[in-house]
Length: 337
Image (cartoon, rainbow, N blue to C red; front, side, top):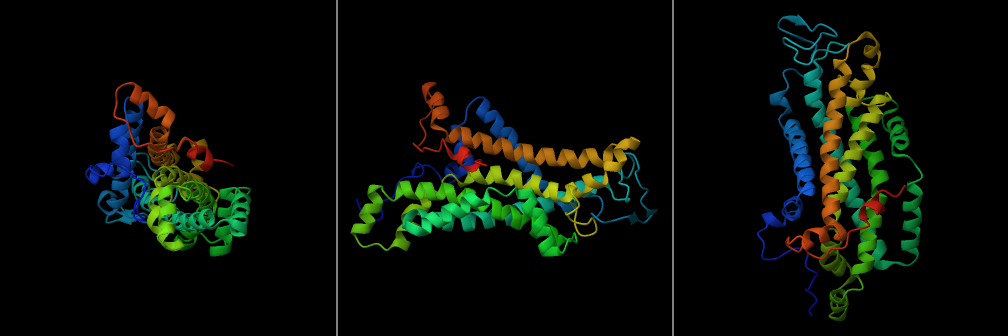
């Protein structure tokens, strides 16, 4: 076995498109698993398309209060020019719901990408090098779990923006707090995979031929250790949406003049519920449920398909046997409080 030999991560003969994470999981799914995955993909796809096409879909700007006919009426019931009504501040509910998808997507990208970048690097170094560095990083990662993500978000909002709800401060506060909480999750999963992989024969062969530690980690271990990232990404993306909404609901979100944010709109709609004005809070809440449900269904479906015990049921029924990847404990690892 040569130094360039690595553990296969997918069928090398399959086309690249069929080896993509979601596509490969769809091909392995069957019955209820496939139904959940399809529903989750549809909901998530609509969320992504809405965020990308928000300038074309939204009838008004997220902070627009008037048009050629004058100022918008406040708390107007759904109908006419305002299909989902208006808020107490005179904002169009439909427009803010659509523009809010962009804010949510931006927080997901910033928070989760930063978490993956830092968590993967720390996990590779800790798992491969070991020693005192590994012990220190493990202790720090475990300590982070003692802090609720929403509490960290509130502190970050005050530190970054001085309690002022701006676009920069709101998004950075949510994204940084989510990043701090999510890094240990990626760290623990990648570290566990690295410890397992560094004992494999192909790593030993690389050492024999004189490959450096950096080359072994980046060339041989990295590709095999990161196969579970799509699962963790989807689960963390839904949690990022809830953290952002919670931050806005508590008054540390983003001002309506800076960006549209569903949690802030829910906060302003609290007083409307006792007056029978249901539309100002219903539709932002539905947007949160829609997005979180879609991402959660995708994540849970991927987790089921990565679980060898559940995959065994499909093989028993005559389905194709997938690659032997043992990811049964990933969800428990990620969700450990």
